[in-house]
Image (cartoon, rainbow, N blue to C red):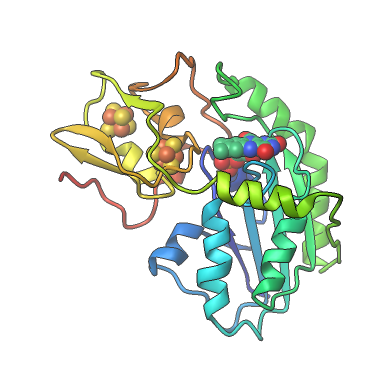
Length: 261
Ligand SMILES: Cc1cc2nc3c(=O)[nH]c(=O)nc-3n(C[C@H](O)[C@H](O)[C@H](O)COP(=O)(O)O)c2cc1C
Ligand code: SF4
Ligand code: SF4
């Protein structure tokens, strides 16, 4: 049984969940979108693991479904599962996933969500410590193990919608579109090491004149803020960095070297 997991992650929580599927091959969603990885035809199960953004799907997940899955023949895909991580609750995000897949002719067989530390700076001005992150992970350990077993047994678990889901879906897909993020700034502490450009899920950071510089494709995941080794990225007086549940090197996008422009 070949299982591939397509993961979108900013701060690493979703990658942490994906890694619990020990027999699965994991690829970042940006690998599919950039053409550096393609699904084989012999794949039996596809997992999509991602954070809840504004009670809906992050932009790269919507693009993955529409522009990647929507353009291929998915007739050999037997079992598709989706897992969301969230800071509070997913509302209708799993239904949004199911509806978005249905739009391209794919049936979602199983979905669930896990609550993990929220590193969204507009709401959490002080980052969660490593200790608290590990505590949160240990609280859901049993549930993760059950989910891994469910997927191995190809259990069915269909998400439900509720009142107002269409409005929330619209709000989330418009609100979470990539844009220039003028609330993030690079301080003089920046050494131009390029680490942030290797982990940004949107490829939105370049090194220019020895310093990080942002383009206009930011999805406010805050990975760059939390993982900068010099703490050189500022956001409106936020303090501390969430180092999360995976090592920073695990967030490096394959093939993305450090580019000086
Ligand atoms: C842009 C953005 C929007 C978010 N919106 C929500 C939300 O609507 N509801 C929620 O419970 N958590 C929300 N969160 C929290 C994330 O879903 C949560 O921290 C998730 O585990 C992060 O996953 P990652 O570490 O894989 O990026 C949001 C986080 C970000 C960055
Ligand atoms: S990771 Fe930090 S120090 Fe390195 S280039 Fe980015 S902002 Fe500068
Ligand atoms: S620039 Fe920073 S906050 Fe914006 S998408 Fe890239 S890593 Fe995330």
